[in-house]
Image 1 (cartoon, rainbow, N blue to C red):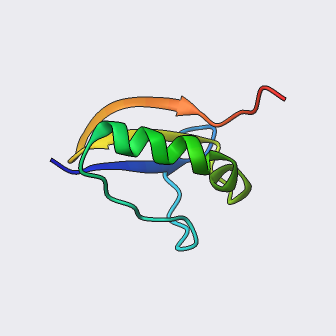
Image 2 (image 1 turned 45 degrees about the vertical axis):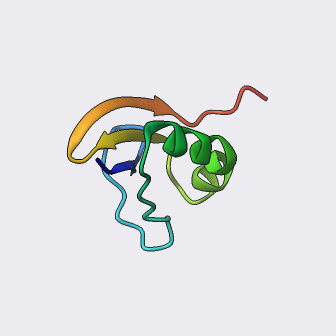
Length: 68
């Protein structure tokens, strides 16, 4: 299984920016831990929400809004 994040606008449009990382993970936990470390950088790069994918299957979508 391969886990990855899809980066999206607030409306759900997939972002195809080459500057956003194209990471693949061997587990869901690794993917979620990575997001916990890099979500602010992704937000600064234009992503407003992300969708976790297991291969090509959508697991869930979440916003990258700060609680600050």
